[in-house]
Every structure is written in C-alpha cells, then in structure tokens.
Image 1 (cartoon, rainbow, N blue to C red):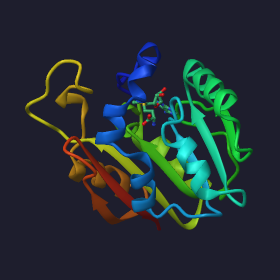
Image 2: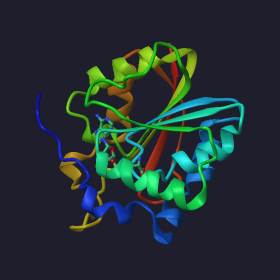
Image 3: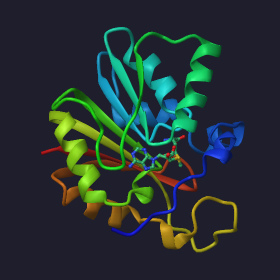
Image 4: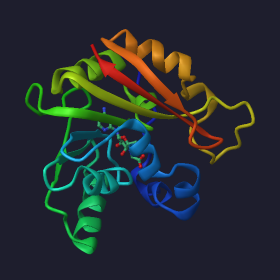
Length: 197
Ligand SMILES: C[S@@+](CC[C@H](N)C(=O)[O-])C[C@H]1O[C@@H](n2cnc3c(N)ncnc32)[C@H](O)[C@@H]1O
C-alpha cells in the first residue's frame, strides 16, 4: 500500500488559529453535518481537537466524543488543551492504528474524517473500520481540501495529494455509504455527509 504524506505534528499550531477558524468554522460545519445532542462521535484523526472540542459541547452530557489519532504528539497537545480549558467529561482521547480504531462495533452514531481522508494509506480498510463502528443509519462527515490549481507551497497539501469532492464521494460510496449532502464552508474546503448503508 502506498505511503501517504501525514500532516507533521511539529506544525500542530497551524491547526488552530483565527485564519483557519474563518476559513473552516468548526461549529458551523458540525451543525451542517447534523451533529446533535446525544450523538456518539468518533473523530478519526482528531489532531489537537479543533473539531473534537466544539463537538463535545454540541453532543452535550448525554453524548460522547471519541478523539482518536495515530500521533501521540497530537494527542498530547489535545490533552494539554483539555487540561487548560477543563475536560467537559464526555471526551475519550485514544491512540488508534492506521487501519484499526480500537472501538466496539456499532458504538457510534457519527464519525468525522476532517482533513484526514487524503492522508490514509488504505482508504478502503479504514473506511471498513468506520462502517464497523457506526450503527446502521449513522452518518460520516468528511472535510477535505479542494483540488486547487492555484496552490502555493505552504497552503495545505499539494494538488497531487488532494481528492476532488467527486473522487472522495467515489471512494467513500464504494465502502458502503451514500452521499446525503455537501457544502463548501469557504473557498478552500468542501464537506460531504454520508449515510451508512
Ligand atoms: C491535517 S491533520 C487534521 C487534524 C484535525 N482533524 C483538524 O482538522 O484539525 C490530520 C490528522 O490525521 C491524523 N491521521 C492520519 N492518518 C490517520 C489514521 N489512519 N488514523 C487516525 N489518524 C490519522 C494525523 O496524525 C493528523 O493528526
């Protein structure tokens, strides 16, 4: 399986700043995806918790957020953030494997892959795991970079590493999901929401 470029943990600060919040507003995106109080969300590739923290507020005390990443450095930074802002009590932070989430079957009503799909070594394998942990009727939200010809070095992954929305739809649909809706939250990204079939 081809190695994919992973977001470098030493650039973690780039994942949370005012400019990113303007271009990729996490609360609005989670609301668009339909995340609601009581949901159990698995945030695969949570990084420093850019989506996991607002998601924990959204799902509330009757919900749960499983914040997973393959990088211990990223998880360490998320734990530091939780110590600083106070753990809302409904976030479980865990190390996952490239193709194994380490969670029980059907434990989630929602899975998020935010700027992660293009980094997966084997999309079909990880998406099989996503389908396994999602209960029937659950939803998968995907956020990705648009494939932009005007790319400049430093402005996200190069076009050759990106997926168009159509390519992402094809990969995810082939794993047993159906595209429900899509949205462009800003000029650089798209969001897709899938139903687990
Ligand atoms: C570009 S960062 C995005 C982080 C976060 N979702 C956000 O939007 O701020 C991608 C993250 O996915 C993680 N990652 C890559 N492949 C993964 C996999 N197979 N399973 C879990 N995490 C993965 C990386 O370690 C990194 O933290």
